[in-house]
Length: 381
Image (tube, rainbow, N blue to C red):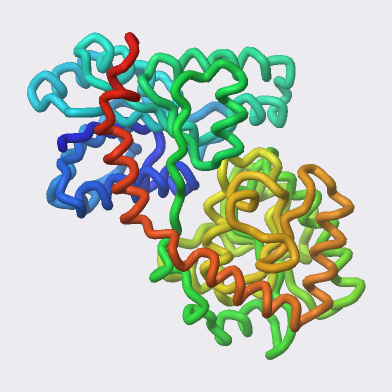
């Protein structure tokens, strides 16, 4: 097939959506499909190394207000139409709901090309964390209107599929997520790295990986870590990531080791060198880092939704605690920090859980969904 992928976030940006879409693109190409990738240009950006069957179209973009590390694409309907009329795709996948995504859906509908959208981010929940809580229902209605302009909405969990279907989203389909178990693996554990963190053998490394931003509930991370220190005073908390709240986090919690953004094998080593992964976010659509921690052999505490609902078994492969129950989150973190044997058993069970989550299989499932005439062409846009 020739598949067009339109996204407003893509490497060199580092976030869950960007990396998920990049994995889709690379694995679609590896399966022999031609990919037309449209995404915003980054200032000063050079050429990225692309797979042979990937043709990249870069368009104008701008920094996201109050979030300069992320960009959005300006409307680019004319450029997209020209490309698709020259190299007509068999199907379109639109990953983001910004102006560029709206342009792509409009062109796909005008040209009669089936289009699926990806539901990657709960923007309706984000606005409350940036002082605009009154806009939450408006943002949700806007997202519903966007996704219903496509012929299918692809979501990463069964729970989200039901949630959206109950609220007026049409043709919601489940597309699982995967994890690169070759990159994220316990063998990446590094005692030298742990020594850089100030840890002696046998001491506890609590790790958090993610965007450092208001919506990530990092106050609960601090509360849980301080509770852990009452039973494991030698414990260190390692924060991996960047974002608009990083300066404030460093100032408020000098006891944290904030090591900034990490990529590739370096990121994998940071994951695997931890002993306990804490993920207190309440605004994830999925939460790829949960799978990455599990694949790295690190016991995980997260709220019971998204990736944790799909894959983390409470008391067996980690702790999936009731949504927004902060006391339960802290209790679970202390329990796993205190009992080394329990933590190791959970880590081994987590490894077994993620072993079959193949990125190639997810790309194959995406192709099947994009190929289905009943779901993609069965209703008017």
